[in-house]
Image (tube, rainbow, N blue to C red; front, top):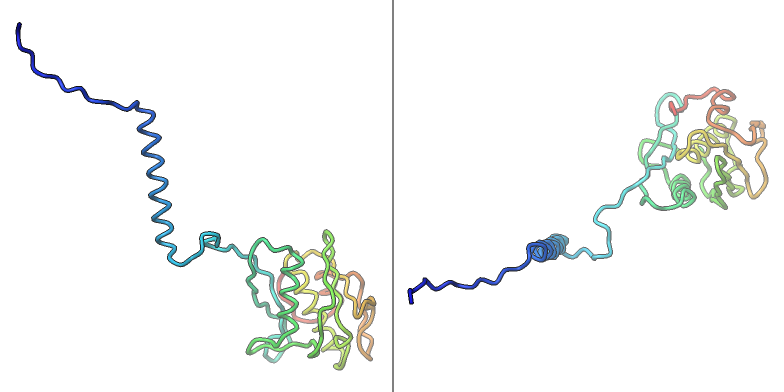
Amino acid sequence: MGQYPMRRRIKTFPLGLAIVAAVGLGAVGSGAILWLRQGTTSLSTPLSIQTQTPQVYWIAAGPELTLTAQKLEVPKGQSPEVTLTSAFNRLLANPPGNTASAIPQGTRLLGLKLKGQKVYVDLSSEFQRGGGSASMIHRVAQVLYTATSLNPKAEVYLTVAGRPVKALGGEGVELDTPTTRQRFAQDFDLTLPAN
């Protein structure tokens, strides 16, 4: 009998099984690396929060009364009503430096609803308190532009303590109901933002 070199028998895995195992280990490994990189971040917390930016409108300091916008970042995924409510809560607080507000202190948001292209804003009775026609026009502009910051073509229905506002102040500044940015800019001579 001739001698043959001894052959080793090597066990082999089917190629498909080897690929599945490698992919599985890779996914587990990358998940572990991601978890380590997150540090103390909870696994249920998203890594980045997308935001939408409504704008709050103030009166800019200067020789002329002009509106100026301040972006307000809020988490994306909120309903537009919640987003605009946040914008109004900011609007009815103290204005940021170098700006002012024509809206009387103590004015509160009583309600805000959106229905399609319509925004319904109900403010407390303090909104009508004090000031001449320039003050009245600018406070309505602040409300109108803030209310339409998510949709510049929306129609705004403004009420005070549940009653539609047709005129403001002792000088009787008349308002169209509903009003839009375009209509307001045509009716009143004041410097307004481009959108």
